Image (cartoon, rainbow, N blue to C red; front, side, top):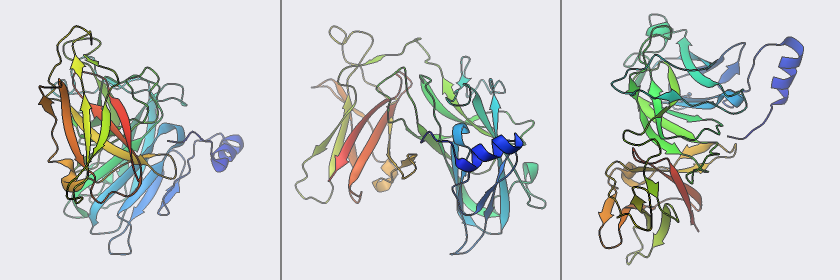
Length: 324
């Protein structure tokens, strides 16, 4: 997410002392304390919206199909911590991720709407106002060093909801190496209903530091294809308990990867892979002692792509590959 101060935002703060944001979607209007976006059905309607809260993150919401017109209002609440966590999903030591640019506060996203007879806080209802799953993508600035990233979802009304679901399906941090100065990650997930969300960090189960990904970290190497119809990028990494010179390589059954690019606003957006990437699984190469996964890049346009690997054993690690 680009670090910028919008002219209108600066003007509003200087003149009125109130918080206001610039919204990047044409169907959105910034208001005092929240951003309101209109969703409408039909081929010419709006099924998605981007809520741009500046230093408090950029949240994009995509409905599969909108059935009736409705308004969705999102509030980005700066908080010091989030404690209403279900321990069955978020173990002891789980914390919210602090953002840079807002004084190191976490952000709790709350939702309301103007749908008569709607769900909690008059939010739209699945099967009545929309169909299918809701896709969310969140970009934010943070120098916090993540252990296991999580996209926390709290089903229910804003005031009483408990964060009981981790809906994370996508996480890309262009600067994770692993690092102590990570910034500008994007995370995403899917959910059937709209209710509070927050970026969270889960602890490692067995170690304060996690295992070690050996140099050169995660690699992404294009492979030659005899047919040319299924170009492949091979992603691999070597994992050990602590010492890359003496410890045996470890198999990681928990590792997953996400692929993303940056849009014109410098926000991370997911890349659509063949079969959604569902067929790609890390396997252990006993000969070379590395964990390997192949990415089918068929149909992807030219450009630079970020690959972030997350695991329950080590902090996120990122590499890139370029398609000509």
